[in-house]
Length: 135
Image (cartoon, rainbow, N blue to C red; front, side):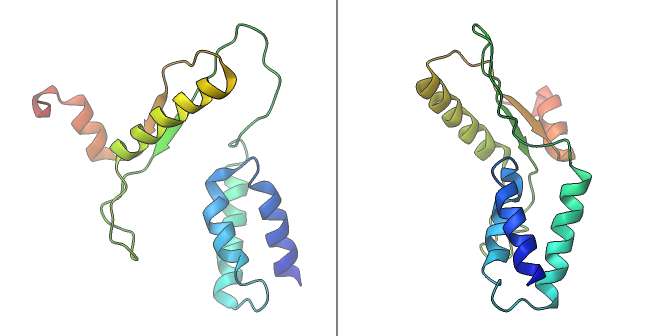
């Protein structure tokens, strides 16, 4: 019963914290009969939320003339996805950011600042800083 209650609270939290949406959705599948691994995963999610309490989406009124700002985060990993063995790349994040920017402009009718991409991968940062490696 406690597992179900915590998952329900986390599902509500995903409205402002889309970064935990996948794991909460996955853990929701086991609400009927959770095992120790699922409980440990929920505890890990709760620790993550506590450590990143200042992150999330803030829904507020904007003053007229203020433009939209889009910030993206990418943590490129080298095929750590055990299911598909696919690598998450910065290029994928860029493509998604451009598409999301166009969508936001179309929905709101407002101009968008140039999207900002923050990267958490040493090799990607080194590649971006080294002009010799670019064609």
